[in-house]
Picture 1: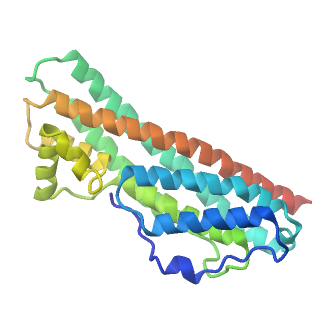
Picture 2 (picture 1 turned 180 degrees about the vertical axis):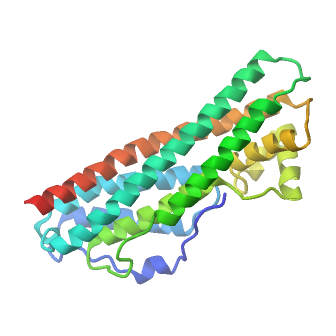
Picture 3 (picture 1 turned 45 degrees about the vertical axis):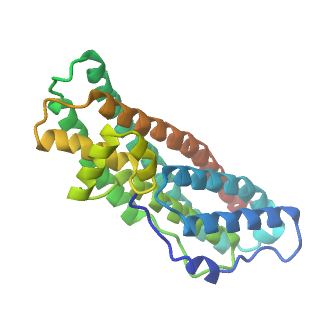
Length: 275
């Protein structure tokens, strides 16, 4: 997985400035943020790890709305305005992530539909595969633009807890978008890996931590187009696509929940400013 790796030390140089008055929610928030930072800093390319971190981020936002209700966090409207400006980027990044996941899923389902209609190993699906490869190139351009636009406002300001929230959210979306985009090119080593993954399912679990499902499917389908294969391992391709589709559905389910929290947080910030 081509994920965004944030320097582990950077998470510890930023202090979490919470309200001076002790409140149960601040301790829960602090614990969840610390846990999330640690998991992100020590993240691997495992898709399960990514799903877990996104779930952890969603859980963090459960505490955010309650934190924003504390009077001590509503004293500086200038801080809230700065965070409000950055919230739009986060909502856009989440929306873009869901869009590109759905596009990939639709293309996968189309190829699977073709495979179900063609039982023989002798088949030509280069047209459908070419459409998928073309769509993936478009997706990568969209992701590249989103990665360029997404940023954390006031990265050096640690006096307001929402700066810490936005920082970890930005980094998480960078990891997710990079994962969806996958590698830029496939090396000979990648082709060799894909062959093993198709023919030896036992080696798939061993290689899962090093290669994302997106990369595996991309490499397999690109090989069909580039090498003009007419005889393919139908079961192997179908298994790869089922795995990727399942992963997409899992990520999208988490993102749907996270999107609602992001919108709710922005609404709360707007309400604080209007009062």
